[in-house]
Length: 84
Image 1 (cartoon, helix red, strand yellow):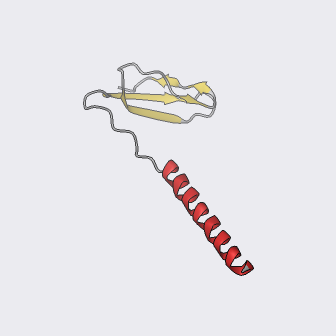
Image 2 (cartoon, one colour):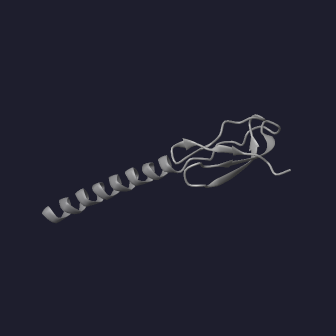
């Protein structure tokens, strides 16, 4: 009789772990956000450079024509003048 009770308890614990695992996976798997409407982002050609380490970033699209500079090394990056 004790073996049957142990099997039932183990089965209940296994089902509970399975349900919690499925719930956790559903929590982590979320659909990506919808893309912005067409025409909302503008094409830009801006290059920024980090004044501390020298890393460069080229921004090709932005929500405005004059976007805020990105941050790198905990500092705002500097705008690099185009060569043209």
